[in-house]
Amino acid sequence: MKKILALTLAAMLAAAALTGCAGGASENKNQIDVSRVNGQTLKSTATAEESHAVLGNAEITIADAKVIEYNGQDVAIVEFNYKNNGSSDAPFTGVVSDTATQDDHTLSPTVIDNVDGVNMLALSENVAPGHQISVQKAYRLRNKTNEIVVEVDQITNGSNAPKYITKTFSFN
Image 1 (cartoon, one colour):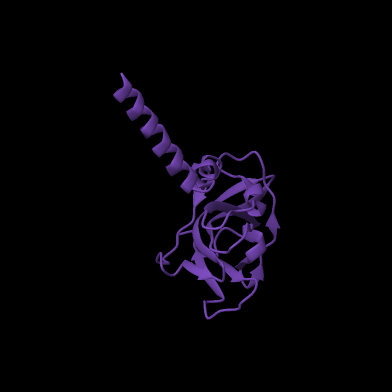
Image 2: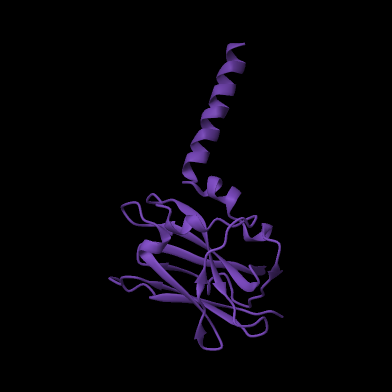
């Protein structure tokens, strides 16, 4: 009986330790998952290396994107993965800036709510050093035919790291 209790306790501690290492990612992933969004998946020919970089104290990946109709407008929801490599808590919006363009015009960011798989509040969520989360941003589209270029820039650049990354999404 003592062995079973000890093994059960050890398994619970191991599970708790693994959950703690995720740094909010497991909690966050339940709310944020662009694959759960009911919309048109956008395509990209970018490789994983091309859409991922360390930008200062942030490790960023431009992940996937989908288009939905929201309040009568076409909106692209872009998902990013953000890891805080700094020494203090920092939100995605505090260390990088992002833009999306279509037809050489900057797309307006928009707030959406009550869409399964989307949580716009994660953009400003503080992330502990060494932890990562997924965040999303929504942009109003000009049309549903021309490519969308998403760029993430480093807010401050005190290193030799790249200053930005881009990923192009298409409707085909």
